[in-house]
Length: 86
Image 1 (cartoon, rainbow, N blue to C red):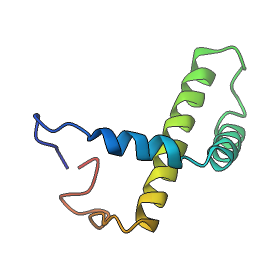
Image 2 (image 1 turned 90 degrees about the vertical axis):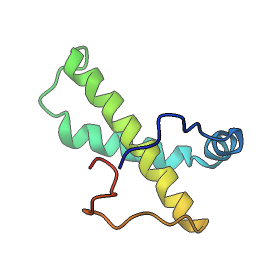
Image 3 (image 1 turned 120 degrees about the horizontal axis):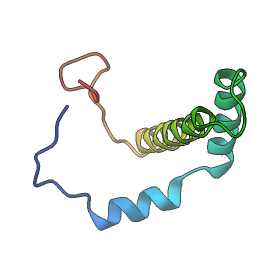
Image 4 (image 1 turned 180 degrees about the vertical axis):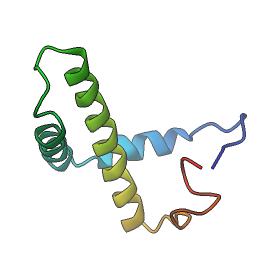
């Protein structure tokens, strides 16, 4: 899925997102993801910190998508040509 280059997120969307992140769920998801995928990484390595960043982004986005679904936002079915990442 690609967005029109002129698209901009609405201010209200940013405010909504900031106010609806479940910090406890995000922290738990990061902790579990890093424990699972970072077993062989040194805590001071670049790969470890890259993993922390990836886990954080994934956890926040997943949490916001789930919250948006609860609010009634419709998403394209996964795997189709309009799916994110396609």
